[in-house]
Image (tube, rainbow, N blue to C red):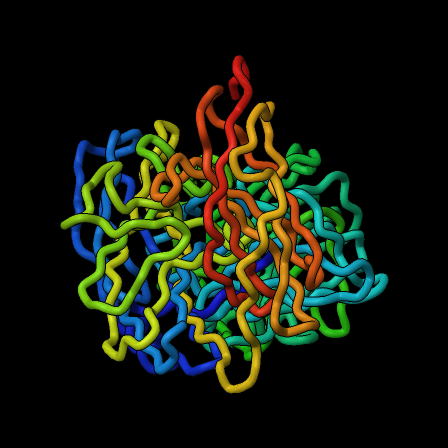
Length: 545
């Protein structure tokens, strides 16, 4: 599942959006770029969330390989006229990594290329950032293919010399000092090919940027026009068209000096350009140039990003050479020593109950593993991503304090890293529209069953008052009848027909130990049932996992 990303906003604006916009049948979604700074010295800065500054929540400075988590509190207002409204919290899918390296500028647009794409029929891919307009790919013979990207980057787009991908113009791109960076993989390329550009449909002399590959000079080129005249820098591409992933970055600073980097190393610097940088109201084109399209790319492109301001050489090196990987792609549990996002939930108002077996923190959230911590997964790992819901009959609004944290490994380089965290308030339609599904009937294993081996197939039946609805079944495996201590959770795929059974494999626990399981149903509108009563089973003697 790929996720629609909404423009990053300050925490203050986020509170207003959630408090004002939730009405029955609609969802209010807002996001904030959460950033951290990795220090090169032994420091720890747990400064509070920055509110209203550049659309970011900055949760401080941490030391690489620190044995703890640094964190800050952000408050999210949650108000609705619907007593069954739900609050969700999830991370926009970065393709496997928990965070991506960042420059000190503002991320204006990011196209991660994470598919999938319907075969031959074109479509759009999600863009991120305030100017991350949807990336429309060509159809039929002009459609690029979705291919595996580099480590932690999810999918990429493969271009065969006739494919197109275009993001509509956004005014936030109009900055005269900027950075464009991308990843590419290509073999021997003949002719003139374009990685990414923003310029007039047919003129070289009216463009913000164009990054190219030219076999005539065996070189990479980058161009910007100032006051109607094209300015170009270039360096040799020899040795880099080897079907391996490489990172390209192009910067123009406030003095209109161009720089082009490959794999984190500065390769060429231009002289200061006279005049002013041209900023045509044109789209960003990826893998081709102009309209009608020409100069098509042959190869693969991934993670195209546009930043305000010229990144420094150190920032480019970090982007090209450092990652903060998610430890397992978004598991349900969060423990100290793992590199991923977590949230610690505290309430400062009444009227909310937690979902998915979560618990409120007692007092302040600790700076390491502690009560109330859980994973902030991306929607592909946690499709429902529910955090809390309002209790029926509660008139008062409530506030949830959410704390972010990350624990870094020893290979993370000094620099800034960022990740989009999304808050969503959802109010189910109560005006004769969608009804939530019924609590699923537990079919097997029978209550008290025993003698199972490593995995246990759990079966529950999906049913919904809305006859045409489909859905999925979510299961929890617990250590106690109340499911206050969760062992693991699983879910079926979406699309179970009304009245049909869903099956998921629950991983076993210790031999000769009683385990408890339960299920709930989630329909195709995202409405969830209550959890079922628990059943128990036990593992046969001598079986371990």
